[in-house]
Length: 392
Image (tube, one colour):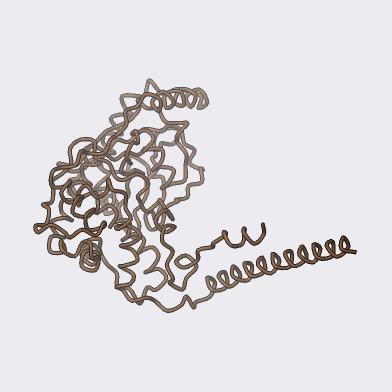
């Protein structure tokens, strides 16, 4: 009799447990359905106060940033820049009439004003931002020139809400070689993978502006004009088109331009000139048969990846170390020192932006601190722990 009662009791427990699991699953499905419906509707909830938004972004990007990014204000400003992109891409996109449109400098001033860790240095923001701009100008930039089969056209990208056309390129990441940087940037900006086509020895280098770091563009030959290109970025690329090289300017002297259209290639002009020189010098080297050329390029790219030099972060300056110590001491709860650290100058060779920090690197910082903001992207954090525990 007892044996029969134990079976009934066990069966009842199993049924209860199964019913509980079903209820949890239904609750989760209901929550996800509500989120989807809310995302599709115009009602995204009430916007938070601007100060709360800045506090939220400071916690996500500044307070919890890696210690090495606190070595100097120039490095710290990369985190502020990431916060600015998040603000512009998410908060302003969800509530465009609530939050003001800001420049990076405006946002940095607001961040330093409202973030308790940085308030002491708010008066120095213009000077800090100027040093940050100089720092960025010294970071190597890499990209690629995609040429059609007969080398008469090249692929250009147009910046978001801009009129000018440029070759796809971007800043090198920490510990990244130049060929890998070029392949990554092209993939992000136009959605085309050149990793297997890139010849590490075929490139042009141009100093875009006086005092700026050299820009290296690898030459990728024989790309079909009918290839589908689609950017993987957000608010960075607004157009991708082929243009005939013969119609583009090779000088920045606007007086030499034949049409107003050529003004849109003012920045690209020295690159076009260098590209034409490269094409003229490599006419005899062009191979017939795309497969053979691709095989050679792939082998060269593999060799470059295996032996190519890596870029290391710049050594911190004395002022930068002081800035990092200041921030770290404040984070740990210690009182700040009496005098603010000085802003260091432009970095030495080997400068690089923090790895994975860019408008293309989505979700990493956002995942750290979910916020309650009335929108799926900002307040949805699904905690699987209790559900998994209930299922067990």
